[in-house]
Image 1 (cartoon, rainbow, N blue to C red):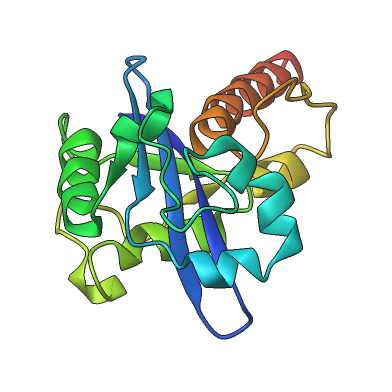
Image 2 (cartoon, rainbow, N blue to C red; image 1 turned 30 degrees about the vertical axis):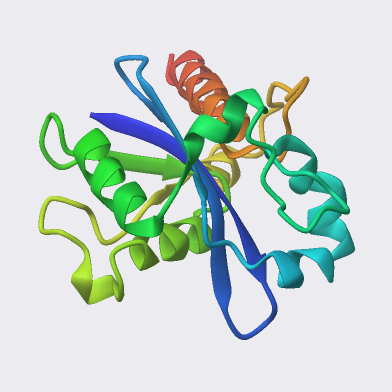
Length: 177
């Protein structure tokens, strides 16, 4: 089963810290989770994250308690252990999944770290993610559909990754003739 996914994370040059994950399965099912324990102080020191990622999360800016419990996405705020269990169940329902992401290297690190070290990945989870950007390169950089909204929201980006994959496959098939 193919799964397209995206993560949002803090990258300070030394560590990668999980913020959120969005996944879209080939059968149309979706999964979205936000890390209850994200490092808010590190995020607040990062203008790019504040401008691009935090605007789609259920947070209150300028408040002592950052979560906005009245936001519709607050239901997706969970602890890492729960997210790891749910991601594994979501991904392996039909056996070992085929994972796809755009610039997949960091996304795979974030995904792997949900379970601990790379070696701690469950046996039914792949130790790599296929990279849509590499496919784009391999096919000669064909024009791709633009993402109209939700950029840097992990679930919206995961949906768009599926759109990109479909466009690349359509392009490849049309050029095989």
